[in-house]
Length: 183
Image (cartoon, rainbow, N blue to C red):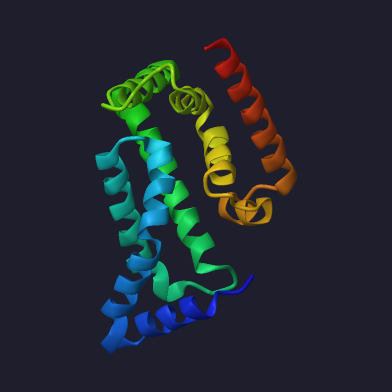
């Protein structure tokens, strides 16, 4: 899919020296909330999500001029946000130099620290189940379940075949069902 007309206008504003900052501000206004929630579902913590989102927009500022428009702007932004989220999670694991299960326990503890947390509510069981998934499987589940992203679009963002994504989503759903059944 090509870039939408609105995105073409934003890109034209960005690429014109006199309106560059306005164009970039409009890109941020249009996409920041969707990108924030995409990142937040991966890293969980509000402050961490804001830090990752800031890094995303720094990369966007530096690279938007070279955006080729052969994909939707949204797809390109999600790809950057996804990569930044995964990089952040990897850095957290290295920084802590702990096992994967300890990192997952840390994420789980962040979830439980939420003042609204109630382990008996289905929505919290779902969140704990999602946290139990490996990072990339959790990412696929979040993109499909929360963002309702089509597999075709997801394959562009994650540079993976649609078949692999469907299998990953299917396995994630099975693991989540089992987790909720046994929780």
